[in-house]
Image 1 (cartoon, one colour):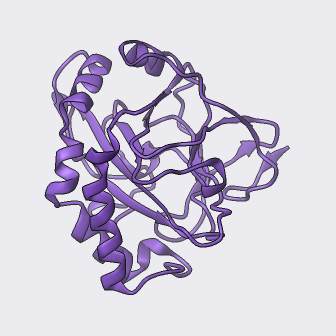
Image 2 (image 1 turned 60 degrees about the vertical axis):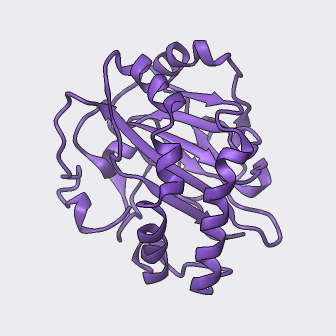
Amino acid sequence: MTQKAGLQTNLRIEAFEEVPLNQAPDFAIEHGAVLLREFFAPNEVDALRQLVERTLTELDVNSTWGANPFESQAWLHLQRSILPSAELSALRNHRRVTNLFESIFGQSVMVERGDVCRVVWPNEPPTRPHQDHWYVGGSTQVWTLWFALSDCPLQAGPLAVILDGQNKQLHEHLGEGVGSQGCMVANDVTWTASDMRQGDAIAFHCMTVHRALLNRTQGAPRLSVDCRYQPEDEPVHTRRIDGSNARESSS
């Protein structure tokens, strides 16, 4: 039996194993993802959190992005406001981040391989199971750093992954609309997710199947950012697996 892409039922969830930062690169390579506790200090993240909250207030968005957030003009405005900001740049290019990915890649790191600011409203349909390589294309050594801008317990809908580091195959993705494709997963699969605190992060490989959990809180959106990286000597192109161009839309 398989689970329909994007349908959240009673998921089987286990907590991330917590490893010291100096062991994180090896753990990530072996398992396809790693939890990074207190990767950023709360004060390092606060400036970006405040910028996101101010931008949402200016946009007067407080409950939903609509049927498809990736086609929402307000969502696009948020990306244009946040992604070039000095507040995000300070985190994206933090030496702690480049040290991590230099250890994973064994070489210098290329930044800005498809960053996204996420604001997920309560009970809004969560991101369906997928692999980033389907959307990003290019190198199969792209990694994502997902980090929480505010405390994000399980009920607020943090990231969940399938730890299967030895299985790097690309799965078929189904669905219509920008950013709406997802892959099928077995009903009995075990997802890995943990309560996340402000500044906690998860690094994961572009073939690692992941999803967002449903935000079940009563009013607060989940605030997070995805920053993507790849080895500096790997080629860059923006053609997605489905033939579309990643530069044509934000997903």
